[in-house]
Image (cartoon, rainbow, N blue to C red; front, side, top):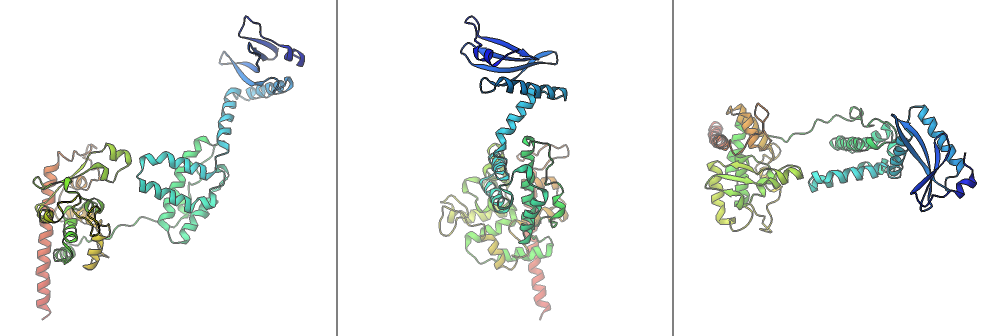
Length: 416
């Protein structure tokens, strides 16, 4: 058995790196050649000797070391490994000070930004800062109750922002999923079940014209649009190619091969994650002859610049995302049809009216269509079929416009 006096006097022989001075029941003081002294308790785990560090002497006295040995032995009797328990306590200590909702949410957000666009990253953080931090941001994660989070979400609903409430709940769910592996005790994700307490929201679809007769009336109006040539061509091209409005308005002349009737949209411009943008393939869009003719007519006017559809104030920037939408409103169709809605219009009528292959349509929409075996389409390999499809679509739109003219004249005759 050791005494305080023997602990103070203990030295390591010069011919050894360290020496052990036993106290009893596995406790010993280890003295190094440089004079440092540390307490250890040794025990056997799965037939092998293991030791638990109990601190340095004299900061940890002999009495303290014996007390720690007693606690470790009590853990062993309960089936708890003292070394593992100490490691867990250290991990808890490293996170304890920062485990507020705000700290964890910001940490989670930082880990996600490499996969997000800049715009999406800012949107997510703005929602958290506006709708969650003021109410639960300073609260420790393990202390936040589902009722508190629900109250914060209901404040969003109070301003009639039902979609935002659901989106913020989804963000909160991801933050809790991120935090749970480091929680001090086993906990569930407190967002479970909260969706049922929110006002139902099933998403909103863009208004889209899918009635052939009404579509024909709109196509006739588009053909007779009296605005500037840049906007007129952009408006007429929108239903023909039915690509995302952002891609259309930012179309560049270098992306076009009018002789081959192809528009190649770089991966960086597509609706993809940051990694997919960097590693993905370009989206090749076949152009019908009507689209090629429109673009050739515009080339003498804007072909000297970068953008096919430059803005009025600066040719270094494209037209705004509101330009084509405003043109549709001026024609009286703004409430029924948004620029993005032409995708839904084409998707519906290409199947219902022309009986074309839905999977090919999805490929042309850049929806990552897959064949029946689950393989991603090679869009270049299927380019010829898509070229035929988009030409059928453009011809169909022309026929609808002509039919609308006929219907219009009949209406005038009947009104006389």
